[in-house]
Image (tube, rainbow over all chains, first blue to last red; front, side, top):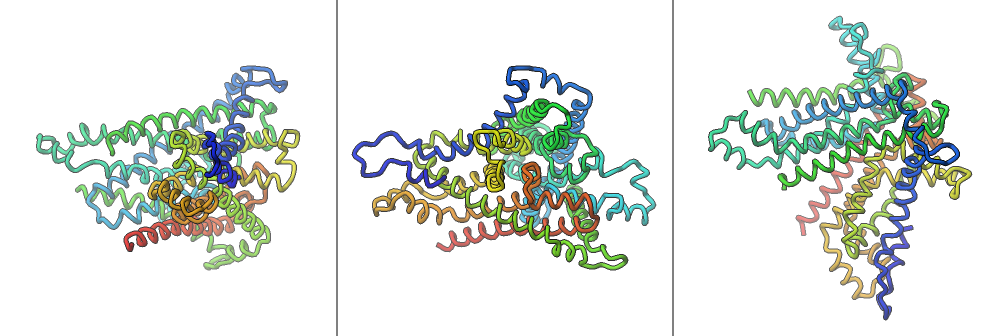
Length: 296
Length: 260
């Protein structure tokens, strides 16, 4: 495919130079069209079609049933909880490393480790948490045998809302650290000094200077983490099997075996996912553009 | 006081990440009752399905990397050289795989390329393998493109191209002998990240019914106790290795630059 792009440009010795520059981008365009745009469009179009191919809103209406709505609701709750906690904890750790007066050498390893941990998602991550917080996991057993705390009796179950949220945090926190550290670096020392000279207290500096500057990156990352959790399939399936009804698991089962009994309802389900992650990412892109104005 | 809180936050973060790692390592060693042993690892490594699926995923990762490099390097080069106006659009498109969940993309593949469609890729094993590779290339596109594009920014491609052309080089020669070696570190970073993504990928492989490592791990996790923990340890080591190699090659480049 790519050899086309080297063959496509007009020969250098040709007497006439047709405007054929754009041909170099054609292989890429074809690939993206065939394997990204068209499959997505197929889903979007299918969401508004009857099995016979005529236009309908019936599929979208079909989403507003109790079971599907509750699946979306649980998914959104898990995504919001893991994004919020991920942002807060990630921010605390990053600001501890950047501004908290910790030794300088901590930064490098922290960022490297965050890079690894944010990529350690999917099936193995679920195994790691099952071995730690599952019924016979390290922490569960330790708390029970050493401290007499029975997590299960307290109502904690790894195959639940909080179990999934805690597991997702393993890749959410490092992602926050990776994204917010450059923003914290961008807080110039001059700003703090200027604020202090004008008589601002530490709290005032944070409330009136640093916080407004960091807010767009903070909210933007929140949107990104939300989309990240919302689209996660593998971790959820490996962790819960199909016991927790969240949207990605429902869609997975629907693609495998049409559990909803209507193929076009599956399109609508997928379309709903695109809408949710699309909104979250639009917020992210818009806010990032705003935050970059300050952090140049 | 400030330092106290800073250390507190850092230690909390560290515990959060280290405890699951200790948990899975500890669990993976406990297969034999009462003593620590490597039994779980021996069982996993000796499982023929492990060997098959792992080999399959490695081959898929390599194919994806080769395809991704052949697709991304010429495009990113050409766009920077001749079509700078297209850059924002291409950048937007390459970010789309982060927005559209993988499960939606593969759902589209299944509907678009089924046996009764105009391009029946899912009708044969080879076709499905190719489709899966394209899917992986799509998932890796944001990382690959960004990495290569950043690499190209740091070299003067216009001058290099003119110099090569004036010496009589054709486009293939320019790309293979001038551009690629100059962005090799960026390409390698993208390649290692692609490898880390592809090797354990679950959703696409499972829904296209290919015998990849991700679905194998999930299946084992549903049926066994200790072996999954051993797999998790190995996967973590693999991810760590890939990311470590990225650090290594980029440090190597920095060293080479400061030496010249």
